[in-house]
Image 1: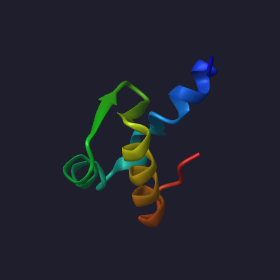
Image 2 (image 1 turned 90 degrees about the vertical axis):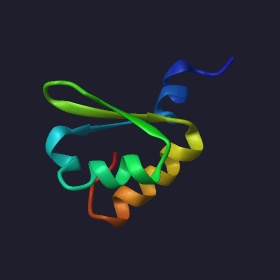
Image 3 (image 1 turned 45 degrees about the vertical axis):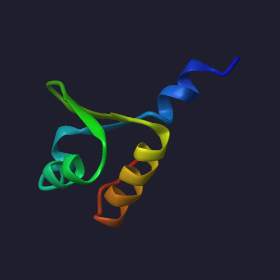
Length: 66
């Protein structure tokens, strides 16, 4: 059985709130993802394929994705 944390890592990106400044609207329009806000961070949730594409997009646009 797969490790739950590895599945979670492939279906979400967690970023500080300021990291998506100016990118959120483009991200939601371009990819099938859900952006969940909390006080200090954003969680971008989607399928592994969409998360990989969104991660590549954010990296190309200067957002550090760990």
